[in-house]
Image (cartoon, rainbow, N blue to C red; front, side):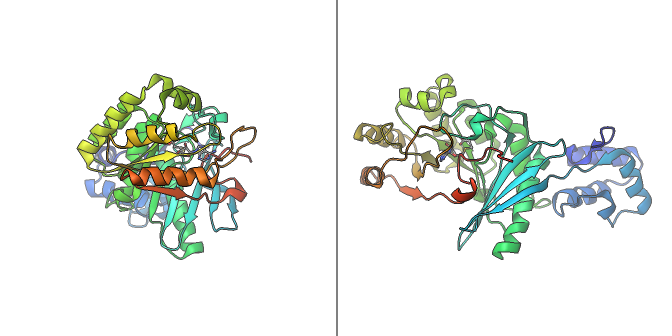
Length: 346
Ligand code: SAH
């Protein structure tokens, strides 16, 4: 790692323009470099062949590109790929490519580790080491797009911020990465195919609503009964469900985009009709749907997935109340790539 040179991908287009003007170059040079960085994903300044050799050499004196690289790749029998992605400082995050017959979804990380303490999640066992930069998030997306083309013969179609970390606690990088991914001068993907998943930090949900990024929002709910949710996700004691709901209603008002609730049904935890009724009441307060996600066991987790019968009962009662509910089968479990299993085992 070279510490004297600045990472050129930390500069905004505006800052690049200011730099080029300071060395007596035209502003369009900045746009050319921006396109190399964010559209063509150049990993070396030498690749920028529409710049003169002397300009490339000058850039090379001051700047560096620190690409994230695949350290270990694992393929599941169901086609899911998990990447351990190495960052320039040696930290590793995990991201997952999930192929179906119609689409490929990238599940990306937003932090190294996580500062939250969800009792059922493997990532929570790691402490939060640091936030990812926008470039490190974009690199995960680009790597998975390449894998999708190579192994699945399709470009990447969807992105979910459901890897390691809490995206709302790395808000500046996550929103900047989304801008780079959706920008026509960047990757040009549709924001409607991007889902930000949060454990529920009301102030940040409101802020994201105001951002007008046109992305989708998912909330990890797991229980609509406050005391139970606080036990499952202890940090949420600071954020009462009424405040979370208020921020979700604001989200819908501003974006007109329906919220997805992620919900795991555990045996002996949230498997009664009282739990279902609480969820129904919660869902009725805002346009929403429910994804019942399969629990992926983690070491010393102490939790067990409820029976199919109970899950069916959830679906039945939710649908009876006009709320769409689907079961989300987990993928890549054999390689610990499923939700909540990302824990840097390497
Ligand atoms: N911090 C964000 C995003 C990362 S977690 C969030 O909480 O939404 C992505 C999803 O995986 C969340 O819905 C989370 O509750 C779920 N999850 C965590 N551990 C899990 C496990 N062991 N099995 C299944 N899903 C899990």
